[in-house]
Length: 312
Image 1 (cartoon, rainbow, N blue to C red):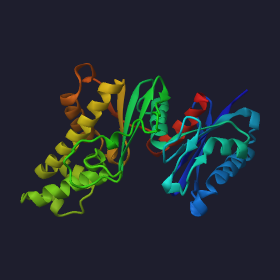
Image 2: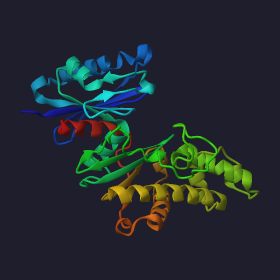
Image 3: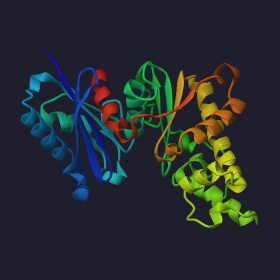
Image 4: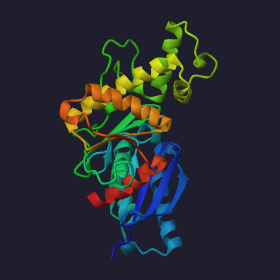
C-alpha cells in the first residue's frame, strides 16, 4: 500500500524537499544546497541521496512510496525533459528518466511556477477549485494554469507565462525576454519600482518615497499612509495586472485567480486595487471571479510537486 510521496522544489540556491502522506499531510520538510557547478551535474544525484537518507531515517520502504514530483525553473515537456534551465547550469536533460534511475521510484516533473499553482489549488488559496489561474509576483511575473485539477503546460511548456503578455507595445525598454512592454515590466517587484521612479522624476510632488529607498514594499507602505504619488503608482500597477488577469480569464474562465510571490505580502490593499481594475476590464461572465492571495508561501512548490505524483 502506498503511504508516502515526495515533493521537490529546485531553486537556484537551495532545493526544498517535502515528505508527504498520500492525503497531502506534510510529514517533514528540509532543504539542501543547489550545487550548480559542473553544469549542475550533482543536482539530481543530491536529491536522490537526500530522499534515500530520509527514507532510511523514517524507516520507509520503497514499496510504500508512490513517487517523487519535481518542480524546476524552466520549461518541462510532458515526458519530463528540460531543454535548458539556465539558473541550474543545465542544458537538455531528461529529469524523469534520471530521477527514476537514481531512486528506483516513479517520478514526474514540471515547471516550478506551474507546480506552485498546482500546490495552491490542492492545499492552498484555491483549495477545492479545479480551474485556477495563479500569478506569482516577484522579480518577474510567473504564472500557472490549472484545468480540471491538472497543470496546463501548453505545446511549448509556456502556458501560464502571463508575465510576458504584451501590455505596452510602444515601451522603449526591453523585458528580460527580449520583447518590449511585457506585463512583468510593470507588475513585478522591479516593475513597481520602475513605475515609482518614473513618477518621482515626472512629478515634483512631495512624497514619502523621496525619503526612503524605493522598493515595492515602500510603495505599498506609503500607499497605506495616504501618499498620493504612491497611490498613482499602485493604481498604475493594479491597472496593468488587472487587465492582464482579465485577458487571461476570458480565455481560461477560472473559478479562482490567485496572487502569490513576494509582492503579495502587501496583502489586502494590493488585492482590493487589483480586483477593482480586474472587474473594470473583465468579460461580463468573468467579472465576479474572486481574486485571492496564495496561502502556502515558499512551500507551494513542494506541495505542488507532491501533487504531481497523482498525474503519473
